[in-house]
Length: 132
Length: 132
Image 1 (cartoon, rainbow over the protein chains, first blue to last red):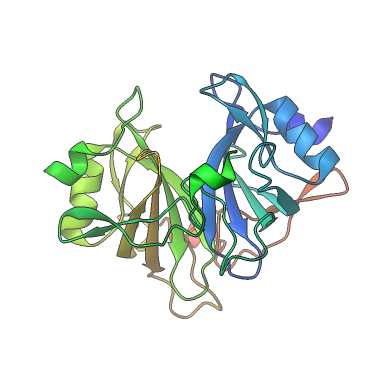
Image 2: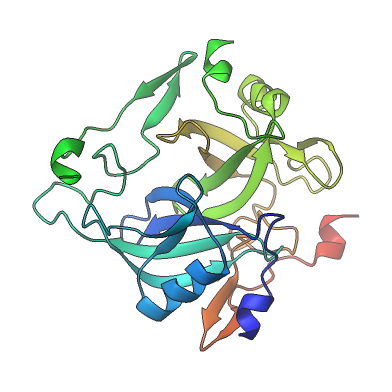
């Protein structure tokens, strides 16, 4: 597909992807996709990443239930970074959605304060109860 | 400095960085920092990236005037991606701030529509007038 060919995949065939929540506009996470992952993401309308640690496609939420519904894809000026607008599903009873494997809303929960990284967002659900 | 040692720099000594605008919460750009760039960013309170193409520190705005004032730094759960809250300076007369070298507000201006990447954000200033 032409639109996939326009992307400048890196030396490992990967594309950095930023997932931003619709509505709150919070940046939830950052991960990578390869060509198959991006094609699958568009096909399903749900985020499918490439797991570098497991070296396989990773349909976000496949274990946790924390699926990301995809609304919009945007490519940057260099055609080598993707910004994705998502709705983070799977935890409707929590105060906020949960994207992070630590049970927090966003993966970006460590803030630099006076020369130290401080965790500043609460754990909304114990990871032991997310990954049963 | 301890907080720099806690970061998991990649094989090239780099850290992916997402710049998000304070207020609008728009994701403006994505770039990399090395250890020196991040230390300098914190020292100046302004974004200093590592330019991979030029292989040198890149004080964003040094040519264009489009300085990024840095408000907050957040590290992700794996200690290998940085989210930075910024105010994009340098173009107070425009309808929106300009972060992209194409003269657009954000680098993420190409939206996937019906299988094509479409430029959906206006050029606010001709790049020829940005880089004199």
